[in-house]
Image (cartoon, rainbow, N blue to C red):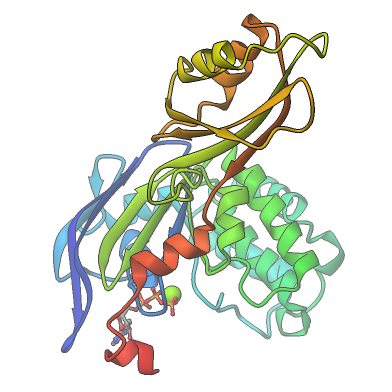
Length: 323
Ligand SMILES: Nc1ncnc2c1ncn2[C@@H]1O[C@H](COP(=O)(O)OP(=O)(O)OP(=O)(O)O)[C@@H](O)[C@H]1O
Ligand SMILES: [Mg+2]
């Protein structure tokens, strides 16, 4: 659905993007992360057709954004960083104006506006000037204008920035709902947002891609994942530890089994290591097959923040760290 190929962008002597490439398939909700100045907004502006790359291409569907800008813009709903809006316009007039600009056919306009107002919860502020709205409502207006022409793709640049926790939860819920039917790329500095909303994470640093994976895989430790389990038998007696160990070692994905603390008599504890694939489902099935009860299953992982910091760490003498 989206393909970025060797994208570079320079602003004078600043190189914002340095050969960035990635693809996003239809229906994915992708979190776009990176430190300040990494090039997130630049990438999003290029995708939305508001900025021309120095070299490389951005494709939406099979169309090159730089060549078929009008057609690709029609497929995209874009919420720019800082959500610039016409302060002096009433919400209802603003949405009507955007529908016209986006060339929504006249006979569909009223219905599209109704749907956007409904989804973004704007009914109570339709008659207010945008300048009078709280940040949360401004953000909703931004989302409403982005979905007005019913695009297949949403590009949202920091949609929850500056909102209070309640408003963040609301906007996040709305994005999740939109993500069920649309392809979404959203940038954010709130890492927990990515874990709750996105099925995939792209991390860029200094204009280059440094990670592309599912959020749970980005939280595996350096030596893979670790799961601590405590098992017992169904009847509470007759646990054969060697046999249990063998059964656990046979679970698909598990790479090693070590002893760990038990929880009392008739139980045994183990520390399992695994590679890329989370073995918890298979673990449960193996327990049932071997007539064991899983008294505890605990997955230890590093935080996404730790991974982010490791992947985007800069030279301590560099300008960014000093800023
Ligand atoms: N119009 C511009 N003129 C000059 N430099 C620019 C322009 N737009 C962006 N840059 C520079 O390009 C680099 C990437 O900026 P960009 O806004 O894409 O970063 P970002 O990842 O969105 O950062 P943030 O998290 O702060 O929003 C930065 O060094 C920025 O200063
Ligand atoms: Mg930005």
